[in-house]
Image 1 (cartoon, rainbow, N blue to C red):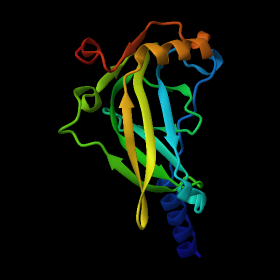
Image 2 (tube, helix red, strand yellow; image 1 turned 180 degrees about the vertical axis):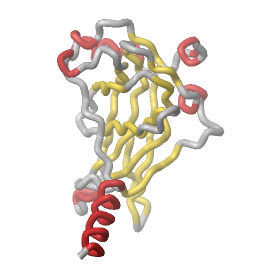
Image 3 (tube, rainbow, N blue to C red; image 1 turned 120 degrees about the vertical axis):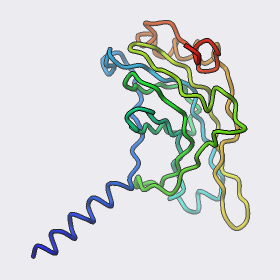
Image 4 (spheres, rainbow, N blue to C red; image 1 turned 60 degrees about the vertical axis):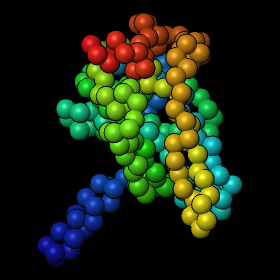
Length: 191
């Protein structure tokens, strides 16, 4: 009987360890912890027609990691092309790459951004301070059908700081109580 319990517990730990849960977007000030920072941007994913054949290929996200605690945040790339924010604890963060999951939160793979041959703003860790609103970019993911397999990739990362910040401020005015900063700004990265 102990062996069955041990196997059951082992299976439970294994199944939970391979799950991905996307960080919940913050939509109003009541959800915001004043000790945290907000990371915002546009997170878009245009799916390929082949994905409709197999809906298990559905979810994709941006992978952000706290350098000190190794805590991972996943920001879902959505078809709505919406601007939104997630809250994170103060600390040093790095945009680590992309994550690919199925509809049941099972991890199907990670794409790690290499630390070489990348722009400084992408590979340099940045510091998120208490109460800050940090623009991390506009991300566009896509699936390219490379026969016989669909290949997920990051198509584009753009710096639309002004336009995205205006849209975010218009959609969520109560969240923009502090000035916004951008990871694209060299002085922000070097502080």
